[in-house]
Length: 162
Length: 162
DNA sequence: TATTGTTATACTCTATAACTATA
DNA sequence: TATAGTTATAGAGTATAACAATA
Image (cartoon, rainbow over all chains, first blue to last red; front, top):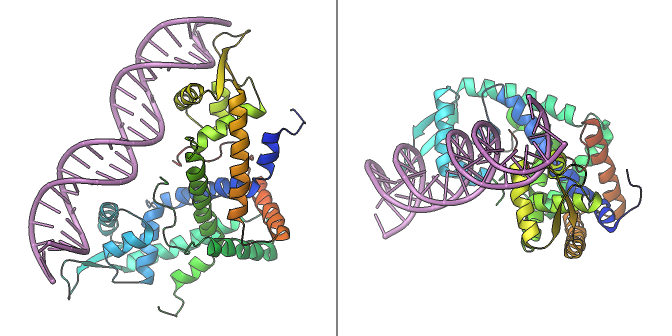
């Protein structure tokens, strides 16, 4: 290994947080994808279930908007989730063009499983920190997100970066 | 907005760092991609230039291995960068199958531009924090990366998550 | 026979556009 | 005419496999 610090390396050192965030972001995402994959789900599908659980009666358009997914993707994801008995489509009473989506009992149970997986995943991911440090890290990241104009849980990065 | 805390929402709250990391990771990555895109470069190409700058004479295979890129991708990226006069391919003297890659003067100048962009990007990204907090955030993230077995700069997330 | 770089191809995924039914 | 959901399709991007040169 060469020990001299080239200009390139120095700029790289001054560039730490960006690299760490991108690398840890993809690491966290792929770890989570692997875990929920064992339940036959993808992260965007989990995002759909989570949002439907919080706001039942949501339309597919609204889901697509909130999660940053293509409407045509929401259709096929909803097909899968409905076929697996995790959610129901009900035609809207006032506007019969829309489907109102809701979790089934099975869907709620699946979300409880996912909550357990998520808690365990979170703990594994932050095993290097103690509770105080974890809280402080969360504070830092939330402040950065707020300052950057990022709404938590909205457009959570499922769509490809163009 | 519903103010009661459902089990789903509680699990979501306990799940903060994962979501923050993935969301901020894609945010940081897309911001950087946009900036270097104005120079006609993609993030993996920047990664190639950076690594070649640090370790001149690297082969395309070694590049692919270090950055987590497909060898066939390295070929087309190197084609672009060579055509733009940013790097040179020289046949290896001992093993004439390999190309030894090196930056041209123009390539080094481009890397200096990128270093400026990177420093500015980093400052913008962490504008919500003061210097002490920025240093502490870096420490937290480096410790997490080390504990998770992530080598800084190696396989920096260019490849798609499978 | 194995490996580097390259090219060609098959495959997946994404985004867009067309279609229906309601409004 | 416009919108929600759906389906079909074109385009982009990815991974794999085949190929030439060298070891």
